[in-house]
Amino acid sequence: MTEFVGIDPAGARRLISSMGDAVQRVRTLKPFLAASIAEAGPDWPAGPGAEVLDRVGRFLDEAQRDLTWRTQTIERVENAASKGFLKTAEFAFGDAAAARSAGTDDGKRILAVWQGYLKDPSVQNWEKVQVMLRQGQGKTADAAYSAGLLTTLGTAAFSAIFVAVGVRNQNDPRGYSPGNMDGVRKDLGPLAEAFASSDAAGTLPKDLRDHALNDLPIANMAALLGLARQSREFVLRAGAKLLQYSGSRVAGKDWNTYWLVKALSQDVGATQRLLATPDDAALLLRSEVVNGLEGTDFEKLLAVALDRALAPGAGDATLRRDSWLTVIDLFGRKNFWPSLTPGLADGEWLSASAPSPVGQVLATHISQYFPELIAVWNRGRNLPGLGVGGGWQKLDSERISSFFGALLQGPGTLPPLRKGYGDFLRKLDLGESHPFGDAPTEEARKDQREVFHGKVISSGALASMLFSGLHEADLSAEEKDKIITELLLLPLDVVSAGAVETVIDAGVVKETLIGKAADIAEKNGLKDTVEGLLDKGDPGEASDLVDVLVNAQISAFNASRQAHGHPPLGESDLRQLRDLFYGRLEPVLKSALEARGG
Image (cartoon, rainbow, N blue to C red; front, side):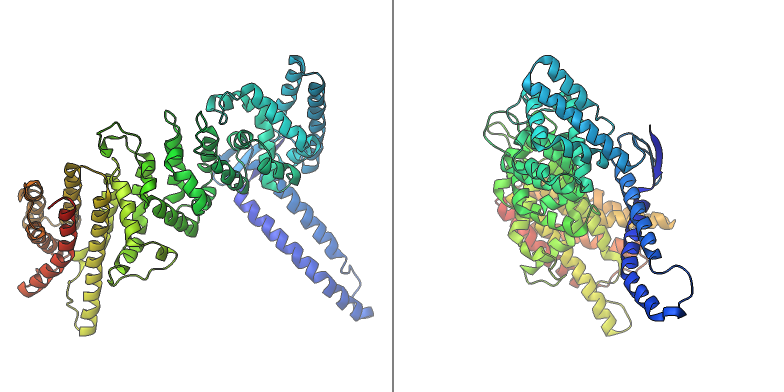
């Protein structure tokens, strides 16, 4: 007999928590109320006494247990339908007691046919085992049913059944391939789901959980992850053990790690906690793991897990930050760079390789922490800026530089890095206010100057980080020059494009301003000029290139100010601005040219 159930899981969990709080208050209140009634004696009006609170407590306890069972079950039922916050499904059992009783009965039946098979391991007896195992399909999402089944079946039989199925179906020495896993899903899927649902509910027998984590063969531990959505704690503990065996030189593909990453891709919190654990993250992200399953979708699967855990706003903010700190630290070490660069033929540059899905994820999402990285970068140069805290003090400029080198050396990472760089510069909006202050009081003008100077320092620091990373990247001179040109022209593109967009959005067509911005970006041939200076047999001094770029930036800055409705700067202010731009740009370009032989 089935029962139709509809629940808002989030609302139900809030109610469950409230009922738990109420039970605690009832238990706290009862002795005080009983003492007060006794003290009042005959003055207490006739009627129920403190014992009524016992009935209230029992009601809340029973209601809480029933709602908890229903919520846990509907969150795991495969065919549950969702509409808004509401989930609906057909439950196999009317209550938790009936579910546990049915699980106990099925556990006895499975154990009986298994013991029969052990006495006579014939094909017919094995088929009986399969029939009984498959009867759990659609029931094991129920934690009460699963607890009854697993408690009765026992740890020894559970483990032995997994081993027996593996002997018949596991063709790879290092775990189940996806094809093999599909072949055992009907037999082992219900047991794996029973393990998962009861573990999530806290009703899994302790000896079974301990055995699964400590004594179950590695391939079967991975199968539990591949066959059912396991609890976060189990994923992390099993993952830590599986990673100890990852990247092994044993022949065959490492399918065990594949199933771990599959589980991580379905649990943002687990991925963040694993990445925030440096030892585990180091095992997962080394090249023999990342690139160890050629011809499969493993690297894309890993990229999905990382994307969901590292994207802005993903999961827990502190764990996401700690995950990034670990990732930056690891890929800031050159022995981890091969993880982002698939193998190449002799003589090929790294850019000839296929884009790294992992590298593209990192390049796409790192911009959320540009302010923190800039603070670390400036700290090493005794420049003003944000304070360095929240764990960022663990990093240094060398590690940051090497991290960006790891990203820039692979194809496909420059566009997302360039976008993040451009978005950051747009938010700075250098043309928004007067660079040296135009407020009525000196104190206010000083504040304006400090704000503008901070923006210039931030933009310069970010450029410096990227160029420093480019120096580290293993690229040809031609490839480096292409990236140098794109990064140098981007600030100009941002300012001039912003000027045009502001004018158009305001509904005022100012041909002179639009023409000015267009001249800066295109007609003056700035890109050709930069490329020409870089292509010289003797590239010359950094100042040759700085002069060209500073002049263009000054023009773009004035265009941006006009777009904001501000008058052009006077000659004195322009000279100061030129010196400021030159001071931030010259060291970056000098190091860039020196690194390429200029």
